[in-house]
Length: 206
Image (tube, rainbow, N blue to C red; front, side):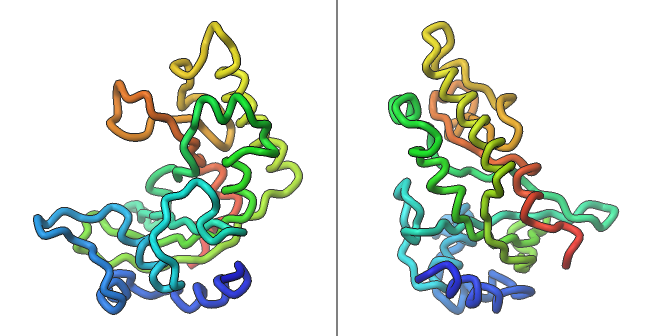
């Protein structure tokens, strides 16, 4: 499915409750033990578009990438990004070897389609689709993200620092951060900061 066609189809979801759609599409949200499948919302969107679940590093529709972003409502009524967005894993060897133009990071970022959804304080509350936006890197944003990537790459290439020196404090828009078991984990991934997401998703629009 081409991105243009997907955007048209996804716009029909705006304002809908994804819990209801999950039920209609027979997507498993709770395990037999009652544990919430963390990726259920993305699976619902993929099933809606006719895409099988895919964890490969290449964009999951070939020429563009689908992401879902949770938004939360503050006490004053305003919306805020609930979390940063994982983009792709950091492979030490791969990042050292490849320039930004050749990177998995760019292949993911340059053709994003994002479904933003408003979530409640718990799973039991409805989650409504807020907006659907396409992510295209403008010239200035491209250069800024390129600089963020090169901060990581330079760190990996530096024999005095290396992989373990990567920290979430790095990067204006894209940060390298621990992914997985938390403190002590050597797994890292590129994450998009809320500042990056705000370039595309208008939190004041409902």
